[in-house]
Length: 328
Image 1 (cartoon, rainbow, N blue to C red):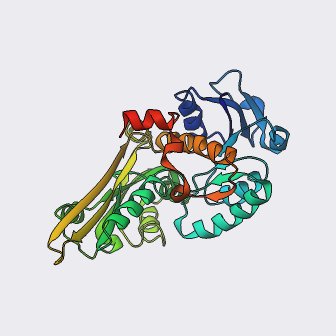
Image 2: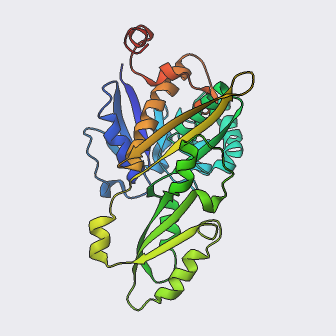
Image 3: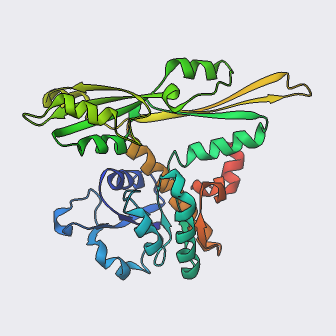
């Protein structure tokens, strides 16, 4: 029996989930829920339905799992605890500092309903988190480093677009080469925020906007740019559309550790991602974890789970026997 899947939200992430389901023959997309008029939302999968999110409860016993594709700022803190009362759910909540709080709320809902809710999945948090955990367990005497980019930060890009006079903008997070090279050599430097990454903005201004003011507001914006060396480029709309329409990203997780009675040997673990499309890669991860969530719930599990709680074999459509014979 195919896994019957629903999507809540049909932006970049939701469309990516729809595309990813097509690459997984054991899954079927049944419905996309939207806050928009369902008739205005055109999806590629037939005969899947488009329904208003207000009608989600009507699908309570018709779906095996629902992937939540809203934003972490305002959507997922409300949606995940709410829909975990109805469905097994998966989300990509990525506000790192608030994950424990989000977990507690979702766990209460999912346990009461007998559902499994997997949160904060994707690549960071998600795959990077798992690699940090593995590396720290294997090399307990050591130090972690995480670098992001070169890639588009959607949250920072949105913050720039909210500045008065800005018509469009993309912000790229870029590792500082000297810091990255030092870590790759096995050094363990103490690196400040400014020493690890720089930020580069490409901005299209509204007619008559004050470029000097916009640049000043960007560079002094707390929590986004004030702690970084930031370069701002003002460009035309045609150049922006030609060169900055995609959403690439990536990054690296390092663990530098010592072993031996005298800690005489150094080991470097590096895990790297280079992504043409951040939302499509994240979507692909969510779909794999949706499979795991279904398996866990069928085994009688309930409550909130993170990537640390999910057996790796449950992500794969292959049986345990197939995995042992082909991947070990």
